[in-house]
Image (cartoon, rainbow, N blue to C red; front, top):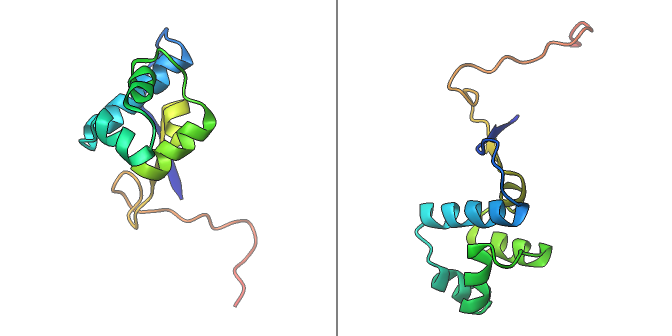
Length: 107
């Protein structure tokens, strides 16, 4: 079971700006600098700077590359929805209730 969390509120910003903001936030959480991202990805420092500032949109190949070198989900960057795998006790710490279905159990 997977739980999705919407982490963005309604904002009046372009998708390019939203992706740049989310990427900056996740890089900060992981303590990855723009210079380190440039080194890991093989992209130039100026190219990274323009994308982090929202001056230039990230394309899908760049999103995939960033996901591969940082572990930051491209889906999260595009949507603002974080996927959280549920643990054995459910996403909220409570017990997981399994669906029983309508048919009797087989033995």
